[in-house]
Amino acid sequence: MRLFEFAFEAASLFAFVMTPFVMIWGWIRWARRERQWTVLPMLSLGALALSTASALLAVASVIYGHFIGGFPYYDPRLRSIYFWGALTSLAALTLGLIGVWRPSMLRWHALICAFGTLVYWFVMMEAE
Image (tube, rainbow, N blue to C red; front, side, top):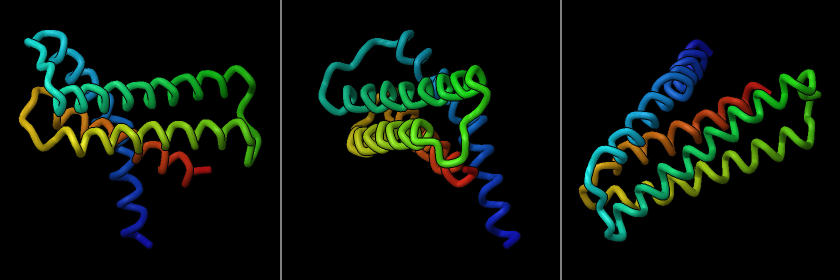
């Protein structure tokens, strides 16, 4: 049981601390460097964009939940948010895994962010 708690805490730390840092770093890196317009770097860019959209959904759902006074247990709206957030992160992870095969400036950023947002959604589902 202790190992499960440690793994849950490590996943939470990764999802809540490292993922936003790597995401912001990736977007800054993309903005400052010369663009690569071939297929695999574009897939990495798409993965970073999808994982950013997933993170924005997470932030928006927290703000929305705060304004409505919290979500009830097993709220269909919250389950829908979890579904779309996890699906977006899974699509980002798929694109990131494909884009990692060629060197590009975003390949590891996109993969880490996609994995981090997917971990975030699983942590939140487990906390429900």
